[in-house]
Amino acid sequence: MAKCAICDKGAHFGKVVSHSRSQVSGRSNKMWKSNVKSVRIKVNGGTQKMYVCTSCLRDGKVERA
Image (cartoon, rainbow, N blue to C red; front, side, top):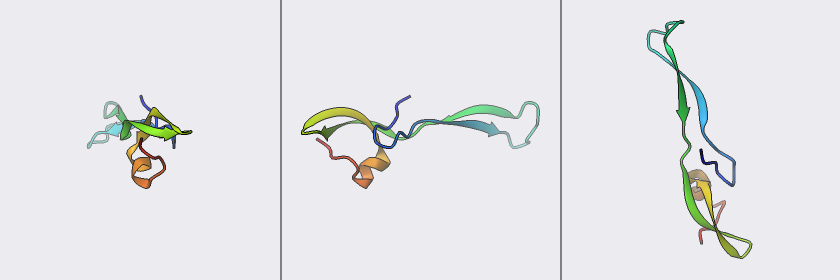
């Protein structure tokens, strides 16, 4: 899974609990994926292609090439 090169945000894992909350069979695995995009950004005077999350793009932590 891709991670953000700026803030290191990646996928999160947990459990999904059914509505009946049965202790035996009501839980299954779940993965929440972060909104990570592959973009070209300016790094040390050149351009480089990296994975950056949309919150870092919105906050202006990187400059697009």
